[in-house]
Length: 577
Image (cartoon, rainbow, N blue to C red; front, side):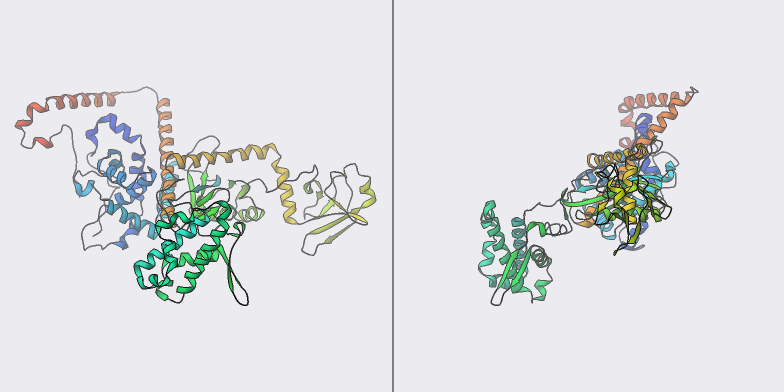
């Protein structure tokens, strides 16, 4: 049976008033207060309703608190046991999740309940809705201006073994044989000698010297091919996940050469292995990046302001295999942010994002991408130094010589011919990008090469350098994601779980940053506030002293109290519905 509380409804009496003004002030300055007031009631619990019956069965745990627990666990980088303990014993977590009832039914959650709720969130892909709700709430709270943003990616290591090629073959073949023996013992027995080689006790046979690795890889490739061919016609075996891993490994790492009389298995060279190939049987979704290694990466786009008048909040995240290219991330990031009315007008990114295609497509969305162009021009004169009309037709060279003829190339673009006699006497001919042919001097260009040349010219200006220097600020965000939320090394593996953990950690960093920014605002307002009536602070001080006095004389009156073990001065709590 579905159970939720209305967290928008205010309490008649503050259920945490017994803490006193000092501890309440600490809570209100922490992330817990921001979470309780601005985020908790916006969590998308309605997307969980289809997993439960509305009227029948045992009442669920309070669903807002459960979704909040999944989010806070990733934000605080806690293990499952720590999350369960914090939910039951940590006052800050209970305050954030509005847990006001001291009974176990409200203040305790079992590890299995946490696993089930987190599994539902991962299976239904609700982490994106959680991130969007948190970000949109903070955007409205601070009236965030999303016009200036920056984009970069961060590498993520999942909880998987990092295997070399030999160890990868051994692990996948052994995993398949273990499952085959468990589910089809007769087929396992029929394989004979090959099963013995991959038993755990013979593991040392695969620890070979580098000079012998090629020979050992060839043996492993032969065994892999043997297993696939022997069992490919058995439908029950071919449906096994471990068999599919075996087939995938062989197709990515090996080639089959057929002669007239024989079939030979050849191991592919390392350079020919695709970056999206299988990296580990425990995490088949992981990829490989030659720059960062195995695992995943997350695209991160965040706001920024030069005068620090608003917090730097992450507006878009996307978790993908490490083999994915940053070049493909720009337009999806802009589109996702635009769907939530958070699209930038100016986007800072490094050169991997700044391809000419991305620049032009971003313009169609009304976004200016500020990024250095790939490559460089070594000469002192570039194509951009030539004179063009409004239609990008070349009028003259930097020295004022007009073209003799202009032709269209076979693949488009223009080929410009200048008089060779004039060019031979030009003082800039050693630095000129033109080429000499038999009777003329030529230069070729198309719209793309002209745009790139002009971009490289702009990159040398002080205005570009002044704007682009703020791109480096996103590196601090990547550091915060690692230090505060533990993003770079996760405790989980597999795309659904990695995506959930990484996305919620980004949402958690937004909460931490928003809390810090609001505390800064409150300190600034307090410093600017003129001195006035301090009666409220005086009353709080008197109440605190009375509470301390009553606490000291409490032992004298306990024998005379009918229910003395629950008595507490100034403790006004309301029971939850």
